[in-house]
Length: 531
Image (tube, rainbow, N blue to C red; front, side):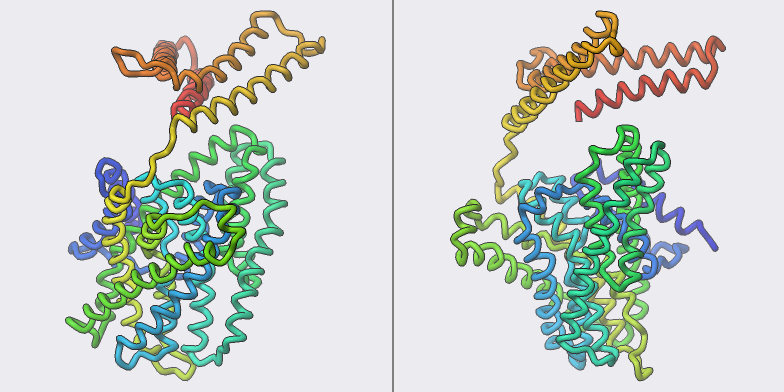
């Protein structure tokens, strides 16, 4: 097996993603563009998306990283809009896009058109939220987009299976399709609920951070495979488990959390970078198989389908935003009156991604009778152009659109006050606990050490309030910023001395690593406070 193409893919996509951080262009768009360009460089091998790799090996960790960083409480508060988008919109888009394709493309059977509709129905699980975070969307809209992207793949994959069964001649019925959808959804949630408790128990009882993080890397694959084994939704199983573990992450020891955060950030960076580069690299593969559909006809079909995909989202999003409020007095009393800016943003944030391409590549070559699957190559082409079109057109214009809409900015003053009050309550509880412990003779400490513990609490309590204080007229820093900068300078000076002592053979490398780790933990604490 030649691993060089894989190494080049990972290294190249990581380098482009890192470079994108220094440009105003979102990384997914730059990666797709680079993939398109590189795909025609002489000597570059074909990178064909294999659905047997993408769905069980790439999708679970991408979903897991997105879900474990999401807020279960925020998602629960937005259950209705998330469900209307992740289930209602995906089914609506499947039928709307499928029917439009049936009318636009001569000779395309309705069953094959519905397969295409299901393939392009789900917005991408990474692109929209990555752009939303970068441009600073309001938290409610970001939560809705996150929730949609976590759950819509399950709906789309199930709808695809039902449409495919009809297309290949397996006699699918409406009742059978609804039953399959319910089994997949309920089964996926059920598998997630069954797995989440023992997995969390293992995470809290394993005593070594390395073992806990090894388990963490296996969790999304285990959840996905277990659900798929019983013909349930692996996507929902992964999301349920990840949301539970993220909600209970405070029960895991600090070393595991520090390592896990670093590990999953690296995994997500590599996978997301490689996935978007892979999308661009599919162009030669897709065009070679296009066959009879070339030139003006293919371009017209691609443009028409792109416009239908974009329009269908707006057709669904606006009624889904305003109709429930018009019909329910309870919703009107409980929720603020939405403006038109929210649905415009959600409607335009409908970029498609690698899941759509992976599903399209899984369309079989033949139907049950042995005849070729009708218009399979065209389905691949239209999926590719829709993915590229939404990523480029919507992805490039979403940030300026959000700026034009002028959403209210975050109230940083109020957020800092809330953080300071929370820290003050926690510090008071810690002080009370310290006083209780010091009354026990078994916990006796010399006065300087007891005072040091209290100083740590005082420092933590004051740090947030200091962010609200005056800035240094010379440097523009707050008192807290200056404190952190000086702390890092002091730690750097200590680190240099330790290295000089090691180089002079006054201490050995093992002792150097111990001393450096101690400084690293202190610097990490300072860095996390600043972040």
